[in-house]
Image 1 (tube, rainbow, N blue to C red):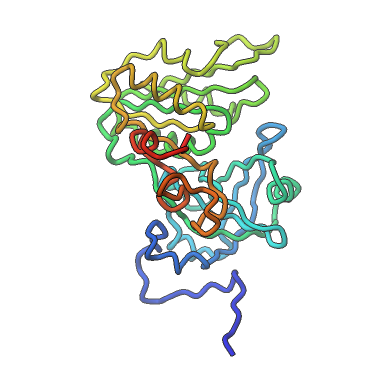
Image 2: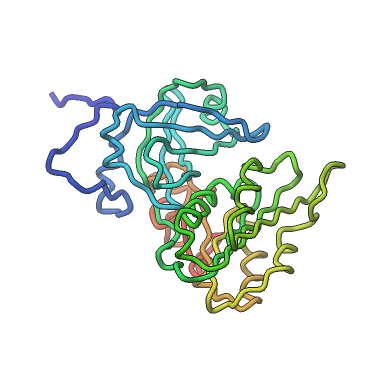
Length: 302
């Protein structure tokens, strides 16, 4: 009789010296490999979002677990299920990973009740990523709406850690109202870095708000960049992509130099449930990161 393995029974192949590559369909046989991890810290960002800092229980697992900005992980809460979540932290930090989770369903509601020391499972990383190496030597526009700042935080960290490799950087962030702003404790830090400009806008200000008001495209009025020397990363609700990317295209930036994340369309993360199907592609296998030219040629992508 075949032994049934618990998902946390991890087998280490002694002859495997490279991290597992989960970004190829031919390697999908490896996706059942799960890493046991512990919640080490929880930071309340808003009434709906929390940032979870998570580390592997077995320190040796970090030697095989690497990711790139834009990729995602399958997070399992035993007894409730698992969900795909994009990384919100720098890939160079080996002590923990950070995942920003919005309370929207059974699994996420249970996670929001979790405490430090809680045990979860991690599978991955999966998916395509932002081509940061390709962007080196260029200006970067990092544009996020709402929860989109969570996956954008990974490329922001990458740019900061490799600041000498990039030209001017503009971070544009929009939210519905000030109470929905994520990672506001980092804004001053980002603005202090040379040649990095952060602009934040809200649609519905409160009495204390002194910043700009309106849609995020309004922030582009004050941005002047050479289009042939600029890349853009856009994260947020799909409805935002068309308005922002069309505006960028009007500024002369080619669609092939704009990259978006369709992480919100994912469900199982493995291409099995078919709920993330867009045209002939699956968001979880062929994405979640696409260039905007590809998105515009995928039926019902946005």
